[in-house]
Image 1 (cartoon, rainbow, N blue to C red):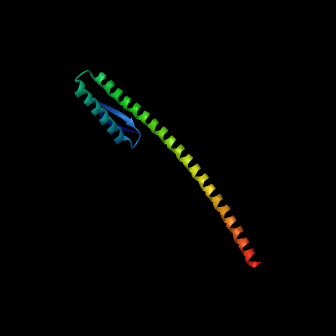
Image 2: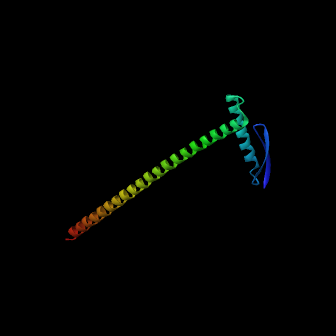
Image 3: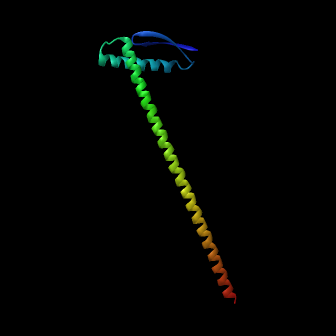
Length: 122
């Protein structure tokens, strides 16, 4: 288990993480710290706990919106896949009809050719 030291809102924290995840955790801590800094710039000094809660809530809101968008995209993908399957089925039916029509035409041509051979022999 790896450990990293991060600074958030001026406070240093020692955090444990899986081996190889150190850089990711440090990046997330920097992003969160920057979010807190941005809120502090907008709202001034309103207390560390309140500003941290506000930052957490804005991130939770963004996460909820991202999850909603993912859900919408999954629905759109499902609809598109349904349309694709429907078009493929329609295309297969059309190909079957064309194949059947060509087969029937070939049989008629063969019958006509046979009749012509029979007439020419007679």
